[in-house]
Image 1: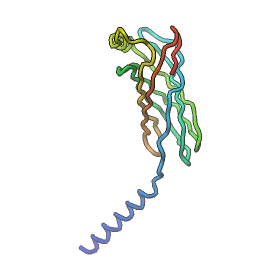
Image 2: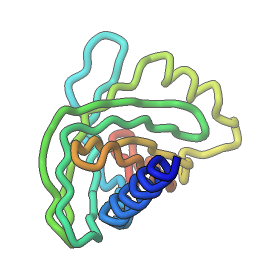
Image 3: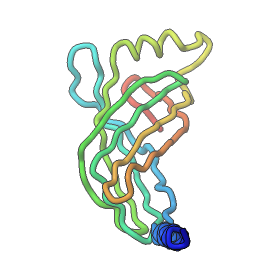
Image 4: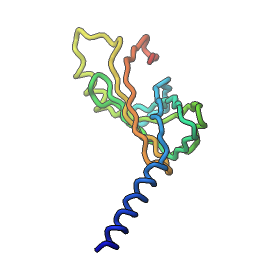
Length: 157
């Protein structure tokens, strides 16, 4: 019985010391910095959403994919995935481009959800996503703000 107690205590100490070796990482800072149109097909719109990813950590972050969902005015609007790979050096930043699709039904839902007195100025958006990283698993992120449509073909974030 005493042997099991010693083995159990040793395993517990070994496990705790293993946790102490895991890096203490600050979360990445991810912001939407632009949107560009892509050729569309059928009843969908396609865009490239540009994200600025800042790494405030002492070690580089390697990533091997990104997925995101965009809500505008409290309604789902667009989603996208990309299997691009890269690395964000320590105390540095990178620009990641993700193609997103907007279905005709999402546009209709947005149109029906607009208040008739509401302008297309300062519509709230929320971007939720994840950046896949092999070594440390998936890093989830949320960015929110307001977008304004200044003209018929321009979007300002």
